[in-house]
Every structure is written in C-alpha cells, then in structure tokens.
Image (cartoon, rainbow, N blue to C red; front, side, top):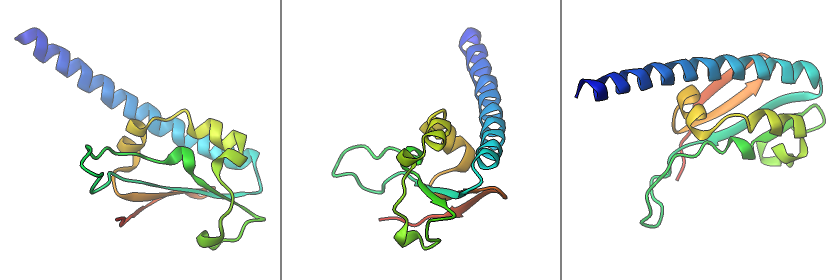
Length: 128
C-alpha cells in the first residue's frame, strides 16, 4: 500500500508543478501577446460546468478556444463583439496551448476571464 501512497504523493507534486508552470506561462505569454499586437484590447471567455446536460454527465469546459477578441477597431460593447479567436491566429495559437484542466486550475469554475494588457481579471459568472 505504501507504493500507492507514494505514487499519489508524486502525482500531487507534479500537478502542483504543472499548475505553477501553466500560471507562469499564461502570464508571460499574455504579456507578450499584447506587446506584439498593439491593436489588441482584451480577450474574454466564460468557463463553467453546466448545471444540467439533458441527463448526460455535466463536464467543465473553459471555452477559451472560443474566446471573444476585442481590438481598438471593435466596439467595447460585448453584445456587439463580432470577432472570435479564430480571426486572430496568434491569439488562437497561444490559447490552444492550455487545456480545460489548466484553465480550471488557473481561474476556477463559473467565471468570466478577462485578459488585458493590464493583467487578468476573473469575475463570477452566472449561467443557465
């Protein structure tokens, strides 16, 4: 049984290291992304576990690969945001490096994530 306990401890240590690395890489990468793209204003997405899924298991999704991208040419009104991450290859490439598990560990569940050149803001997100 001690081998199993030891293995679990090793896994926990590696998960902690992975979270720290993901946090550092996300921060560094987002700073560079805004430096390299001066027209970029913000990137937002909502991540959550659905409350109901037609009887199927409810599974967390970060939706970060479907982020909304705001540029200086885009309205700041989120209802008018027509640009998605697919229109910005560098933003898409950066975000695709991270998994749903990474995003959950970094930002949590039932939140809206807002990334700007000033930093990262996480707000509670109420969804149906």
